[in-house]
Image 1 (tube, rainbow, N blue to C red):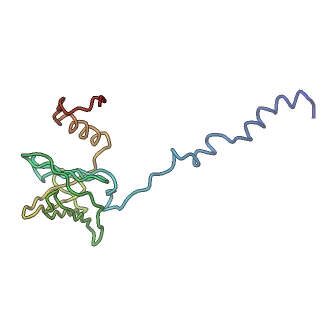
Image 2: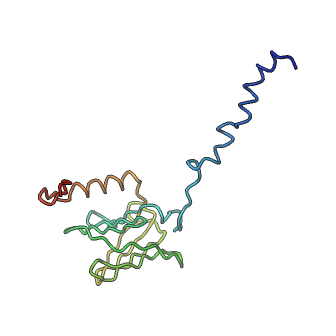
Image 3: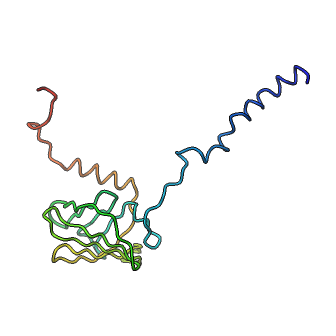
Length: 165
């Protein structure tokens, strides 16, 4: 082989050694497909959901991995013990409880509801029964809600840890 030809082919040979980014894209963990959780119809139950009344405003209930938060129409938000759904018989059931230990059962069915939400919901909190609809939330909405919750907490400057002991 002629020496001048080696210099021309060298960059091509070196590029082939490392592979192109297109060839290794599947090996990149950032490009790995996120595993879906249990499905109810077309809804991924491992993604954040929000439940709301069939018509009008009032209560809401946020369902997300590690978090179930009930916001009644009046009063403070109530966290329920986070549980994974039990999917069987064409519905998902979240058997949980209030902080005081009252039983809570959240049942979701894959039915069009209210304003076109993909899930029908029934929530039993002790003796109270709520009917509603459920739909997926975007992660941006979850972040916005958590940010607003943090801003709503009162700041007590007298109990703030200023690092001086």
